[in-house]
Every structure is written in C-alpha cells, then in structure tokens.
Length: 497
Image (cartoon, rainbow, N blue to C red; front, side):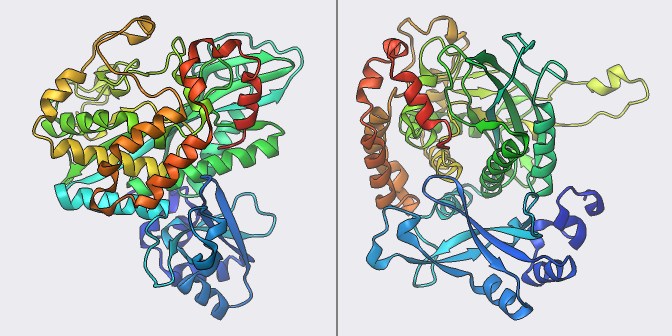
C-alpha cells in the first residue's frame, strides 16, 4: 500500500487510513483536533451541480447527531419529479467522501451525501442510488467489479490584450505558449487533496481569440476507480475548476460546443471489469469475449444513451459533420473517429523503460491498465445516471447470445471523419434532444429492468428532453451554423453544466 503519509488527500494523511475506512469518530476527531468550524453537506441536485448545507460546529453532541442521522431537506426543491405534499427527504453523509474545503475562509470540512426517504430507505430515484443499484446488479450477475473514470475537458475564457498564442492547435502546449497551465496544475493538486484520483492534465486542441476574449481548452484525466467514486470525483473536480476560475478572474465552462469551427469539449468515460484482481477485458494481448459483449451491449443502446450523455440542445452541435467527434455507432481499436475506442494498451513483450534506460532490467505486466472508452459523453451528463445507463448496456451485451457477432458488425477500421457527409455502414446517433427522447422511449424497458431506473426518472428525462423543442435543430443541423440564433444558444448553456 502506498504511504498514507504522502497521500495528497489531507484527511487520509492526518487520519492515517484510506478514505474508504473513515468512521464517524475519525471525522469528529479530525474536526476537533484541526479546529474545524464548519461542516458542509454537499449533494448533487437535478441540474448536476453541487449544492450545500452549512452547519456551524458547536459541540461534539451536535456533530455526532448530524453525522449519524443527517438532516431533513425539501426534496421537491431538489428534484422536480417529487410532489410537494410528500417531498421530505433525509440527507445522509457518506464518510469516505469527506474533504477539507480548499476555498472556505472559515476552516470547513465538506462531505458528499445520499438521499433517504421517509421510511429510512435509499431514495429510489436519486442519481447516486440508481448507480449503486446498477453496480450491484452487475456484480450479482457477473461476479465482476467495475471500474470507471472520466476525462474532463473544459475551456478557460479570459480577456487578453495583444495575445501572441496564435497557434490553432494547443494540444499539450506548455508555458509560455499556454495561458492557463497554472490554473490547471493547481486544480490537479486541489482535486487530489479532496480525494480525487487524478492521473494527469494537459492543454487540449482548442485555442482561439474572438472579440477580445481568449478561449483555451484543457483536460484532466482520472484513474479508474469504483463507479460511484468516479462520479463523485468528476462532480468535485468541476466545482474546483469553477472556483479556481473565480480566483484567477476567468471563466471555466464545460459547454459541449463553444464555437462551430473550434473543438468541442467532451467528458469521455472509460471502463474496465475485474475478477479476482484480473482485468477481464484483455487476455494474451487480445480483447476477451467479455469485452466484446460489453461493447456490443453499449452500442445496441447508444441512441438511448444520448438521453443521459448529451442532455442539452447545444450537445448536438458537437455531433455535426466536420466537428471531429464520433457520431456513428461503431467501435474500433485506437480509432478516435468511432463512438467506442479501445485505446492503445501496454502489451509489448519488452519493457519500454528497460530499452531506454539500461539500468532498468525488470519487466512488468501492465495489462491491468487496459480500458475501453466511450467518446460520446459531454459535460451536460449527470455522471451517476450515465454510468448507470452504461452498466445497463454492459449487462445487455453479456446476456446476449448474438453479442459477439454484433461486435463484429459494429467494428470499424476507417477514419470516419473523412467520410462524414457520405452514407456509411453504421447508424448515426440522434441529432437533437427530441430524437434522444424518442430513442429513450423506445428502449426504456432495458433501463427499467431489475428496477434500476424507476419509471418516474425515465418519464422525467423524456419530458425534459422534449421540453427543449429542438426538433428543428436536428432536421437543419447542417445549416444551423448560419442561423443568427446560434450565439444566443451557446450563451444560454455556457454556464449551465
């Protein structure tokens, strides 16, 4: 086990135990010994943003009570599908998520929470509980444990004069040729201090200046962890980046498309499945039948998955031809033009390190690092709901006797970005919220199976998607860029997610 003393999570350092083992007494001891004055309950509401309840720490008994039993909240103000006449909910903390708030002027510990109903049961329709149900169903059916992780892309918008960074490609640019590396590096540090398992960050392709404002794209990638933890860290990371934006006097946005002629921002999701500590996606350098079945199941449900992955009208601007974003339902190996990509893995017979560094002779098996990537998701997705929907796809594929054959039919070796305007061999994703709602309606029984997604949630998602009235966007997407309303559409969703 890595040294807990050097763990970037400040509570792990102090308590000298993994976050997964935090107890109520641990948190009380930390709060008392570190003279913490405020306890903040955090939760994710219907809009996918972190909300807060602040508790002044007044004594051990009060602290013990609120950590044990949570607090009452108005559920109808959190979830629109709950009726006001029966909406009281309990908000209960999950100890392992506690972190020291890096921005609070008053020393504060924040902790993520889950919802319970009046009967003391997990709220059937809360996003984190839906994901928990999906993860449990997957393990029960397969005896495999899932790991997931996200790639979070975002733009930093600043006001600059005499900008000299004119390159159209900012991929992996470093200072002084990028303006916001300092913000990104600080974000990585703070996310890790708050419990996020960050792998790396870098500047991304998007970079341009328009009407006196500089737009610069960056990305932070996480390590594969439990699906619930993966969703938690994405939400906390988005909050940290926005807070740092305020500190640096800039704006941070996760909008899927910020300009039609510039790279859009996605939130790609990777997954792997383990059994007895082994990665079940890869064996002898080849993808396993398990992997192929999981891929086929997700692609079978891909049209309906857009209802979870791409939840605003501006999301579908990113799928327009010419935007270098996968919009056809297929998969490939190291193929960035396909909806699902199997990234390059570490399966060489020799160690790269030993080749370049003569003193390094030991060879390692890094097959555990192999993941599969879904590239269609963007920052408008609620990561809990989308991850649960993906898991439904995994189970569909694993139970389908035709899944291996389907995976062959879905396989693509071409660069589809070069043939986007031509009819191809693969079906395309929906091109509007209206079409996504229709796809979800057609596939809803898949998500409602095993009571993973309540009917009320599916109904709500369909109604919300239809409420955007963007059918015309889907029908006229190729000419939409000429529409004078486009800047207004982008401005409307710039800070929505």
